[in-house]
Length: 134
Image (tube, rainbow, N blue to C red; front, side, top):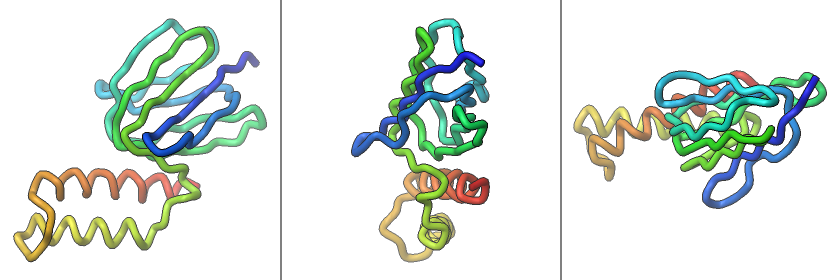
């Protein structure tokens, strides 16, 4: 099977970089599947889970909180606002963040605004889903 190079980059580090067989990405208009020889494309990403199949047929997941993906010449480059591999996610920490954001939305004492709380809920829920997939 033909392969492609996948790079997932967050502002602070490269989260993943290797050859894969396929990748599924959370585009703003829905999930997008990519295999070798895909047409060039630039897509905005929404918070969600990137799923890829590596050269050993192992399925892996990365939680992202948005960003962009560039597809071209058997190369997929994800520039994420934030990204974590599923196995790196601390479930207890994400559950605590989720509860703090929910308290903020209920109007309880919090340093978060309503908008920040909504964004944090979405990020924490995506991370928790990704962690449960690993």
